[in-house]
Image (cartoon, rainbow, N blue to C red; front, side, top):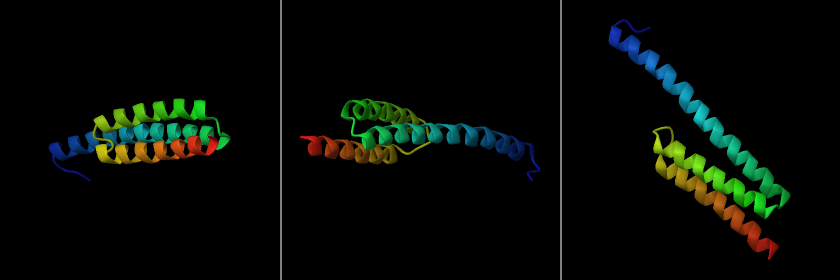
Length: 91
């Protein structure tokens, strides 16, 4: 356990940050699951809309220090790649 006032304050701040960061990451994962279900159904319209929402959520999460910008970019790229594969398959 921390002894100094500064260390105690830092511990309190870390707890707050951790809960905020976990909530943000959870929202991103939930949004990705919605995208994947739309993709599994083969609904290109819904999947495109969900990809747009996932992209917004990833950008918002990456703008804070919760997730690195390149991690968010990599996730967006991979999800877009899957949507494009579905579109190519349908054509």
